[in-house]
Every structure is written in structure tokens, then in C-alpha cells.
Length: 353
Image (tube, rainbow, N blue to C red; front, side, top):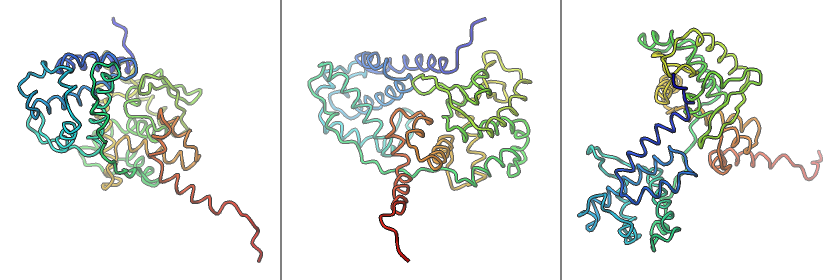
């Protein structure tokens, strides 16, 4: 019997195979770019690049009079070298509103446009630094101004109500209640874990049985980029996990899913998509106006940790942000209110009655 690959390696292998297919649909010179960035990027990041570049070359094929006469495979680096800043600005305009291969309308908001232009900047930089092209118009394109998004998170009482809802399922429909009886212990363990550690949903579904260490109160997870770290949990998470593990030990997983911690009703490792649906189902009962996703549970944890500790470096470390500025951007409003609260903390002179 073949040895079962750890989840993150399995995902990496599937992504790499998918990426090979995507690269075949791009001009041949693109393969060098993907080989060049491979040591510094995750397979998921490279897939995002391939997707963005496919949209760019589709745009050139539709809108550029010279390239329109060519097959996408016939586009060369010299064509790339001849593009002007105005061509790329036209591309930004095109991104706001376009039709995909299935003739469905796609509307990109500013963040979506920003990611696609950032991908293009990396792409051009790669060839420019290696002196394979003389011009780098992408470096001159200004990224769209981003409007800061308000962090959506659950309030303290909403967190308690969410976990109550998972536990008793009172507001669910009759049909949902039938499933709830079979999954409530698992769902409670999963949501308590997400809310109590701030791990990503991909890290949560990737957990194996031997990744939990109750002696030290920690779970071993694989961060983006493959780094292995231990995240520690409190007593509430421990109790919820132990309750679920009693059930989990009675289950008979499908072959290839034996080590998975969280199993679906089909006895397979749960997918990111199914956890997203599960969070949405319960969160809608607690606050239908907030669009709560697993990532918002992560923000909820980050907010609570920051309010308790005031240590932005600790929050960045626990959430696995490689750059503390990412964390700071997220929690800037809270930093400001903390700074404001400092104004009355220091007395210069005693006030006399």
C-alpha cells in the first residue's frame, strides 16, 4: 500500500500538476518565468500568477491589433517589449468589466485589479532584470488607490451566540437539524478551534490526528510556504477537540483519508469549501447582516488577542503574517484608539484640589 502523503504535500502536488496544464495555454517563454519564481513562491501563488497572465494575454489577443493576428502561442518576448504604458492602462480599464471564456460578465473591484497588475509587474520585472527585454512599462503603471476595508468581525456576544447555535441548533430548519445531530460535535470542535487559535481554514482542514499534542496544548500546522509551526490552544479548544476525538475514533474513514482529523459525512477529509459553507450557515443565524467567512473568524481572534495584549508583533506571529505591516494595516484603527487612550495616562503635574 502506498504511503499516504501529508495533506499539504498532496495539495502541492495537485497544484503543481494543475499549473503545468495552465502554463501550456500561455506563450512558451512564460515557462522560464514560472521556473525562475518556483524557489520563492508557493504552488498556490504560481497558480494565481498563471490565471492572471492568461487574462492579460487574452486581452492582448482581443484588443491589440498586432497580436490579434497571432495565436497566443506565437506571442514572443519582443511583443512584450513593444507594449507601452498606455497599453497597460487600457488593460486596467478592461479589467473593470470583461467577459470570460464562457461569455459570463466579470466585474473586478479595485483589489482584484491591483492583484492582476501586481502579477504583471512581477512578470515584467523578471525579464527586465535578466535583460531579456529593454522596456519595463509595468514599472511605470500606477496601482489603483485602495480604499481601506473595514474589518468585519464578530463581537464578543456574537461569538458566544455562534457557538451556542452550533451546540444546540435551535434556529436551524428541520432538514438542517437532521444533519446537525450527526455533525454538531465536529462543527463545534472546528469552530471553537478557528475562533480560539486564528488558524486559516486551509490549515484547519489540513490537520491530521497526530498533529494534536494535548500534553503541551498545541497543534502542528503547515503555514503558507510550507513552514511547520506549533500553535497553542486554551481549555475551551481542548475540551471541544477531546469531545470530537471520542466520536472520531469510532469512524471508519475512506482509504487515503485515515489520518484526517476532520471528516465529512462521506468519511473523507473535509474541504475548505465545505467549512466555508458551514461557517456561513451558522453565522447567518447570529447576524444576517454580517458576511462572516472563516477568514472573518481569524480577524475576530486577531482582534481579541490584540485587545488583550496590545502586542502587534505577537498577533502577527500567531496569525502567521510574514510582515508585521500586514497586521498593522489590519488593526490600524485599533492602534489609533490605543494611542488616543495614552493621552490621559501620563500626568505631568498633580492637580491640586
